[in-house]
Image (cartoon, rainbow, N blue to C red):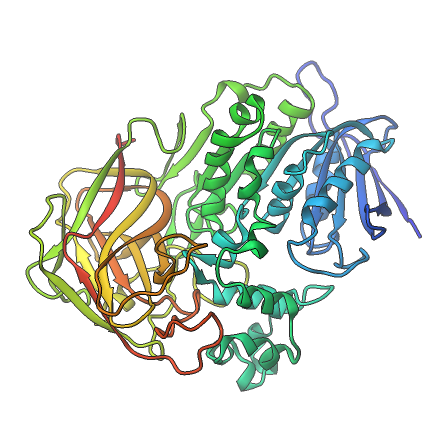
Length: 582
C-alpha cells in the first residue's frame, strides 16, 4: 500500500529578488514502476508540496531507499524545486525480481527514467544522480538513449565493470569483490560486515583468515555457506570477454547523448572509471552538447569527499560539497539557470603537496610534458636500505635487480585505492613498513631543490622477466617527505598474462624479457623542495588484490602456489605528466 507523508520545512533563504528558496516537501512512498519484462520496481518520490510539474532527478540504488543519508539529500533537492524518484534496484529490498549485479541496469534504467518523465510530478526533463553503484547505473541507462534524459552526474563510478571494478590490470580486487559481492550483497538486503564484530565472529570466519582460502573460487561457500552465483561468474570470466563487454559502459560511450559531470577521488577504488568517463565522453559521445558539456572533479579523497584521509590532512579547502556541485549542474541543465557553469573550465583538480584546487582546460592538461624517470642504481634495490635510484637520464643497459615473490608471504595492502568497508587500509598511508621488505624494490630520486608538479595519467614502462608462465607487477609512485613519511600518490598493477590487452591473455615464456606497461590511473601532486620521488615495485598487494600463484592456472583454481624469481631491468621508466607548478 502506498503511504503518503507531508513534511513542512521553514523557508531558510531566498534567491535574488526575494523568491522563496526552499519549498515545503511531500514524500510519496512505495510507487510501483513496471519494467518491460513484467518485473515491478518500487521507489519513493520526494517533491515540492505545491502541485506542479518539476524537473526530475532519478536515483537508483541497491542499498535501500531508506539508507542513512538518503532522506536528507532527496529532501534538499525537493526543497529546491526538483521532484526526485529514488528506487530500489531489481531484486533489492522492496523491488521484485532477482538480484544479479550489473546485468539489468541499462534496460531498467531506461524504463525508470521514462516512467518518471510521464508522471504528473515531472515536466519531462530528467537527470540522474548518485555515486558508486548508483553512478554505474547512470552510465548504463544513458547508453540506451532515453529520450527524456537531459544530464547525469555519476560520481565515484566505474565505467568498465571488468577493467576498473572487478580488476585493475587484470588482477582480481579480492577484498572488495569478496566483501561487497559475497559478504554484503549476496541476495536482497545488505548484510553486516561480520569481520567488524570480532566478539561474535568465529576464528575461521574472521577477515584475516577467510581471504587466505584456496582455491579462491570456493571461498563463497567457506564464508557464506552457499554458492554465490554472481561471484562465481566473476571468477570464471577472468578476462575481458563477452560476459563483461555486454555490461561495459565503455563499449557504448558513442551512444551517450547527454552531458555528464563526473566526480572522484585520487584514492578511490574507481578513480580509473572517473577519468575514463570524462575522457571517453569528450572523445566519443554521440552529440556535441554531450562532448562539450562533460566535466570532471577529482579531490584528495577515497570513496567520497573529506578533508583528512589515510595519514594526511589536506586542509580545510580539500572538502568539496558534493550537493552544491550537483545542484549547480542540475540548475544549469534542467532549469536553464545562467549560473556560469558553461563559462568555467571543465576540469577541477586538487593538487596534493601544495593542497590547492586548480581548474584546467582538459585531461591530460594541454602542454603536459610527459617525462621518463628511469630506474637505476649502483647496488641492489631490495628494500629502502638498498641502492635503487631514479634519474631523468637513461642509464646504460644491462643492470638489473631481482627479488623472490612468494604468494604465501605476500606484501600486504597498506593504503592506496580501495574502499567500501573492506577491512584493508586505504588512502595515503605511510609506506615505510612495506618498503623494509627485501621483496620490494625501492628506487628513490635525489632530494629536490625545486618543486616538481605532475598532473595527469601515470604509467610504468617496466622491462622485466619471471621464471614462470604468469605473475603480477605492482607499482607505486611515492612522495617522500623530509621526515621520511612515504605517501603513495599513484598505484597500478598488471597481471602479466594481460600485457597485450585485457581480452588477450597470453602466458609468458620463463625468463624471457618483456616490456610491461602498468596503468597507474593518474594523480595531481607537487613534490616540494626537500622531498624525494620514489618508485616501489613488487608482485603483490594482498588482500586488495588476489595473490597470483605464478602457475598460469585460471583465476580461482590454484591451490598450490609457487615461488617466482622476478627480474627488473634498469632503464625501465615511470612516465610522469609534468605541468607548470601551481
